[in-house]
Image 1 (cartoon, rainbow over the protein chains, first blue to last red):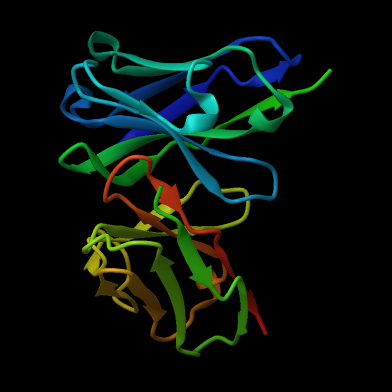
Image 2 (image 1 turned 180 degrees about the horizontal axis):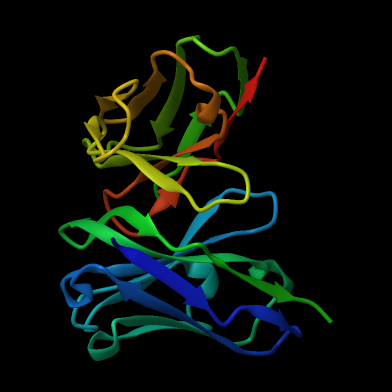
Length: 121
Length: 107
């Protein structure tokens, strides 16, 4: 069974940093683009970042460019999101998702259960 | 960036009803469109990809249609477990964007 399990969320002050992790199992992790998608409390879904299978290509939503960095460790079947200079508007549940690609983009399946990041003083 | 607009934003219906949700892209996206279901406090679940292809394991009462800029998700006969929020998403290019969601409630 395919599974994605996020960890690393929590409460952080504005301007602080946090590193999210996603452990993948049940599929060949190194064969897939992977992504982070977030959902602010009571709001809709927002794509955050995606990374190519070998880590040589990445894309970000404009609002996190220069602050967030996506990375992966294919040997450990793990995806990461380093979040720096956090703002209140980054408060959200962050989901890890496998990308079913057409070229470099695609749809998301499956999704992890999410990890909550709260940015507040 | 491509904007995705769903309508309606919310919808009340009864078990057994047929419902249709619409998603419009701000520019043509061919058939590069997916639909998701999200139940309260749960992660989204993929329903449809390629505008009309059913994800494995999804009941056949769900169907998708459309191409270019206008798309629909139809549930042919609502079941109690279908009351949830539904999102469309384009994957024509980056940045990927989602519609704002349609909340399907029990009448």
